Amino acid sequence: MTETTAQTVVPFEDVKASAGTDLGYTEWREVTQEMINTFADATDDQQWIHVDPERAKDGPFGAPIAHGFLTLSLIIPFWSELFDVTGVKTKVNYGLDKVRFTNPVKVGSRIRMKGSIADVQEVKGNGLHLVTDAVIEIEGEERPAVVATFLSRFYA
View 1 (cartoon, one colour):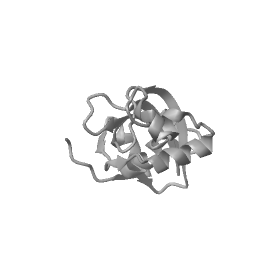
View 2 (cartoon, rainbow, N blue to C red):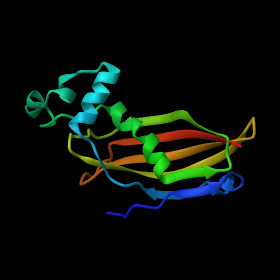
View 3 (spheres, helix red, strand yellow):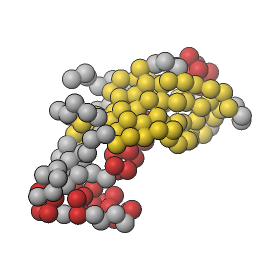
View 4 (cartoon, rainbow, N blue to C red):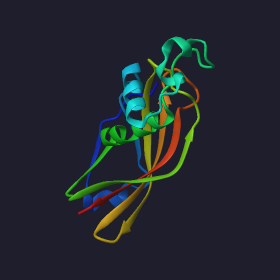
């Protein structure tokens, strides 16, 4: 598989030129039962398919799976691993335009994100709005876990 990529760091005044940039891949990150349980506690989603390893062995996936929103939430640390902007006062996770959970992540799986900046637009308040295509892959699987359009803003 493709090697990981070093973080791209861009001065604020050069961010607009980043549109169309393929940022490469993050490091692999293992999804553990502890992560899943902590997420279940934080979100009050204690469904057995996530938090009961014994019962999940006989479930549809043969093992516990991560919550889709747990996997999605890892876009934030993955994004920070791939891209940063210098010369800014504020960095904002602005939201998501589209999200699809295309493959469950079994406990013990390793995942990583591939990112590419699709668009950069100026916004009020001396800001830039970035649209990033994000794909969270599962090691050894053909289909990714998550395909999303992630939105962020940087203000100088």
